[in-house]
Figure 1 (cartoon, helix red, strand yellow):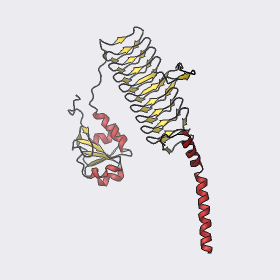
Figure 2: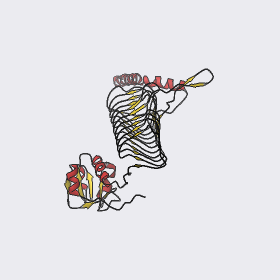
Figure 3: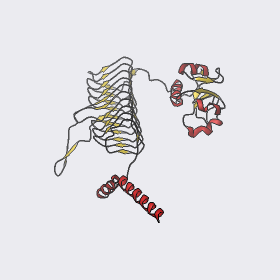
Figure 4: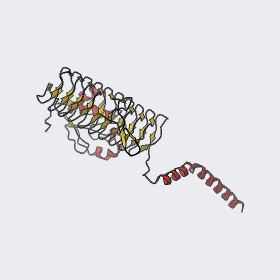
Length: 351
């Protein structure tokens, strides 16, 4: 159990100065944790980023609320004004993270190949397995039950939760976080049909993950078939996401849970993919595109920016093709209807 006894206390003046916020109220007020607008007491900081919770602001008992300037007049308690309240909250909440840091050292039950290279101040948990010629950088944490195969490279200050699997030849940059149960570098889904049976296509690439990436629990990222599967720096992937072979994801892109990305897709920088969305194979998505939750991208999106949404349930393919052809003609049909309506209106007026 995490000890929630307050160990860090900050005055509101301290927080305002540290994070460049505008303080309104009692700067000497001390806080030691964070809470919701409904549950926070005077020793806690809360925030308002979503207008849907404005009614909760009016009755909050928090010691202070992080909010935008235009919400300040509705706040009955101290306030910390921020251009982006959620970002300011994230930075303040990090001060109160009570989860204990893992002490460095190698557990006696860990199995480490003699050819592996382990950096300084590394923590390796119980029953972890480290393969031959693997290199683990300084200040890394390898959780219990992790399996790291041969020829893996892990940059400094990475954190692997329990039961993470890194297959042969995987490369992680610095400060990468991988949550429990994730599998990086399993074979991609490569099969060829030989008339009456399937034959496996060798998956000869690897997975390369850049600095400051975060991979969610039970997510799977397949190794490439020929070229590598690549996540550029600061990519954030939620739980239960499937990233297939030869996918490339641009820097600073965020992908929500249960999303599936098919092989050889290319996703740009600063993109957002909503939960349970899908991207078809060999599709390219330009920079700064948002794909709404439960939407499927079937064709390339070439124009940067913008939000895409929509998914139609499966149906017999001939029905779908007929419907799609009709959808593609709908603008012409509407234009024809408008002309007919105008013509009828003029005839009625003439009569």
